[in-house]
Image (cartoon, rainbow, N blue to C red; front, top):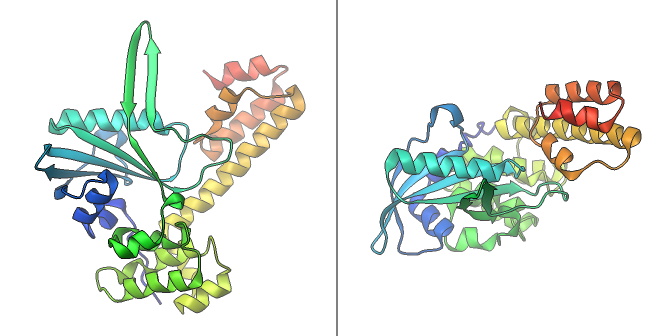
Amino acid sequence: MAKVADIGSKRLINLAPDAWVKWVTQRPEVVAKEILGSEFHWISRETDVLVKAYSATHGDFLVLNELQLRYTAQMPLRMRAYTALAQERYRLPTYPVLINILPPPSTLTIVNSYEQEFLGLRAIQDYRVINLWEIDAEIVFEQPLPSLLPFVPILRGGGEVSVVQRALQALRADAQLNELESLLAFFASFVLDTPLVQQIMRWDMAVLRESPWYQEIEQRGIQQGARRQLIRVLEQRFGEIPHEVEVRFEGESVEKLESLMDSAIAVSSLDEFVNILFI
């Protein structure tokens, strides 16, 4: 049976840091010097990876990588916070990149900047957005980009059996990569039937249930179900729900959504519910 993959973002980027920073910055002269710690105390996350990079034109700078399973409405503010904290800690220019792995709900628009104006003062933070489902799978093999091999099935054109098999062969050919097999199988299960994935991988698919990615997807599914149910109850009781109210539900825990469901049933008006929501 294949080993459970270590799918931490730092682990993936560290497979080929030079290739990674060239790809995310789209500058072939950039090289990776060091993967830095990104523990900012109150916002430390496994998905946040800082790479100290260098180019002859720009000198030393930081590439801030945020790998997000699915984009949420909170990401622009989070990217602003991460970028500012990284720049303050290391005193280097920072190039922030948001890599979205799976498409968000159709009601959510992905943006590439944070912007706010308050009392005549403006806060702006641009960042590069890479949506993996828009990336051609062939790039992974041509460049090459070993860090993206496990994601091949969800890339554009990567859902074909022959392409998944190529990615599997590349993983198995390198002792450093073969432990990522279960992660490849996990994303293959999004585009291929489970029996077919089992046939390609030649091992028990139960291993996927041990993957943190599987557990996160499962939890997200529960959260999305609770969110849809809450919106349905509000619409049945009060009619159309303002978009800013729906957005506020994004990223909330199942426990919080269940508490809001109790409130949605108990209140006598939408305004009363909104007051509870924004406390």
